[in-house]
Amino acid sequence: MSLTTTPQLPAEALAELHAAARVLEHSSFAVRLASMVGQSVEALKRALPKPIENALDSAVRRALEAAMRAALKLDPGASASRWLHRGLMAASGIAGGAFGLPGTLVELPVSTTLLLRQIAAIAAEQGEDLADPVAQAECLKVFALGGDGPADDEAEAGYFAVRLALAETLKGVVGRNLLGLLPGFLGAVAARFGAPVAVKLSAQAMPVVGAAAGAAVNLAFLEHFRGIAQAHFTVRRLERAHGAALVRASWPAA
Image 1 (cartoon, one colour):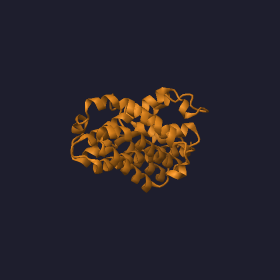
Image 2 (cartoon, rainbow, N blue to C red):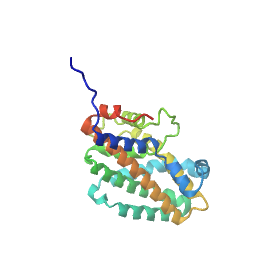
Image 3 (cartoon, one colour):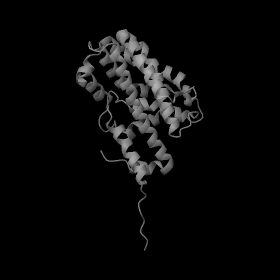
Image 4 (tube, rainbow, N blue to C red):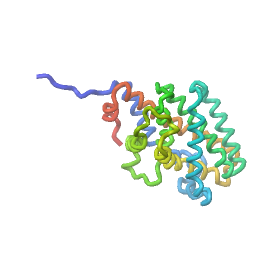
């Protein structure tokens, strides 16, 4: 009588998956930024003025639309210099911080485009075809994976739960240009991306945060989403190599 063995990921792939899971399930931009500026997460959230908070949803959506139109049209090889992006993000943060929160809202589409260029470069490094609208959509998904939605509970906020929810808004994307997607996808991404953006703006609203600190906030923003992108596209590469079902079954328990 022959015994069947349960398929398992190779040890190296399993180690990569576990490292990605730690980032995707436990990475918090709010906690990281609160530690950096010496304030609690609650204090950061209270620092955002109500008029800015009310304008945030439309600002985030406009930033994503601008990034989508500008960032993914370019040659991904042109975005490979991480030091260049760090310099541009720092300069963007300085400019935003120098003019306070209104300046930061103006600067948001610029920094979001820079982020998306870095995300696209990481995607290409992990074997994604950026000419494919599905791969382009996966780049935008990183903004949603890097921030909690406004009404998330623990059961809804997990990595695969978010991917599943976003996949529902992407039905029919194959063969279509990403810019022609229904607004539902962009709205779903914006709803989750708005949370870390609000924390970023809140930090820059604090009296101790000026132009120089605005650069540090932007760099923290860049590092956070770059880490999310690296983890997300690692998972997708492992799924292509070993099958999505095996990768999901090998996901570490919380």
